[in-house]
Image (cartoon, rainbow, N blue to C red; front, side, top):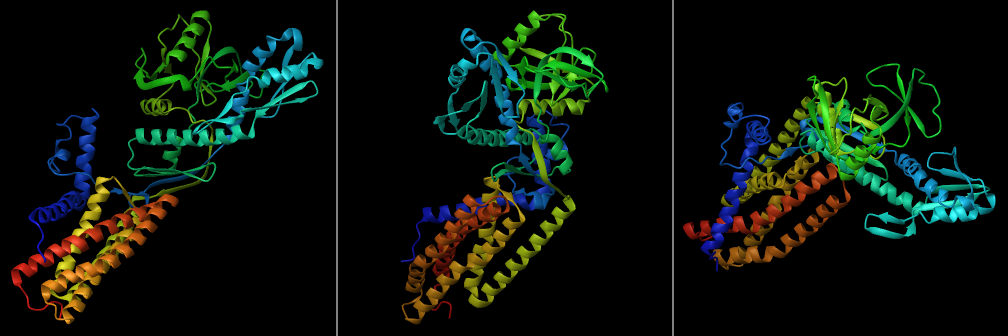
Length: 555
């Protein structure tokens, strides 16, 4: 009745052994972390094995080295809440429509007359035609330029442009459906670019999540300050190449229509007058790397995709001897004179850069330009000392809870309490093993989930042991009592843990940040608790019964 096949015993002990093995690196956290950092530096080519030999020797390579990642509240780091200016994208999108609208109407010049763009509000394009009788025909030509709205799942039935007539003027704006789709694309693109920038900086387990319609939560453990994080992700890094019309020393000078005035980064007090329409943009960049120019000064090499390289090559071939401006986020960082045709789509950005600035600029350009500016509504720096205090407090809470549960089980169930306590130790080790294996991030709420799991873990064991006591009172004998105790407690154990697991899944799906951390540890704790209660304790009880052959149990 109590026989457990050998293969099943091997599997149960094997799972327990793996749990101990994979959780063990967390007992030597600092040493393993230094070993992992050194190994990552060697794999990335940033160091040789000889240079980091001491760190590599801190932990054997044949042992698992995955660690539980510590969250912002445990490691310290930076917290930002940013609001994306999605309305800026509307203005850029509509402004970019002007060349297409102008060319389409010029093809019908005999009908609509002369075409002129007139000043308008941001996000709105106003076009005037000289033949007022043909303004309806002109509006239809512009409507024909509209495309189906592109949503996340595909193309919708609505059109992307809203075209209306006001006297002799045609007013073009984005449709409501296109604005909603643009908002979604802008937020998704912003999230992805921020994630790329943070990942390239080598930080550990950042939390980057959308909150509400236009806000992004960014938490990066291990970074020095919120200001450092803002410098990394707050720059739009919008790179454009513009023809130069002239220069001026008057920064307050109003630009002519279809022109821009941007300050020089290298020469304070000097401003460049540029054509508004860029030749190429940073969106067409495929690579950017820090380098040095021919004078051994820090610079950034860049390379365009085929379309950008073709446009860049055609422009340089037609404008030899003329200057062009490289503009980064509204500042002219360089304005070289074109000496020859630049083919191949590659070039170099020079300026008064430091090595650190070229490295950061290359990261920003590689990850792409943010589609819109961001306003930082909340910023907070969590010091490493506070993180260590949190770790100490969480460790103390876990140890107190652990000791109290161990003592209670030992006093209440005697020898069976020892079995329950061993199962509890294995349970906690398996939780940490799973957290390490999946690369989960442990936060203060996550520690709370582990503490709660410690209390819940013995619940199933208590149910089983109390059922065994009840069966012993019916004089069925120890073997029968053990079998009936496990079988009759099974339904209650599954019901209680499945409902709690469903709650953890809902918390994970609907929550964010700390709530998810709590849900992860709670969910994993439920799984390991059921395994240790139904399999590990049963195997240990059976082994005890086979060896001792007791006449009574849990008297």
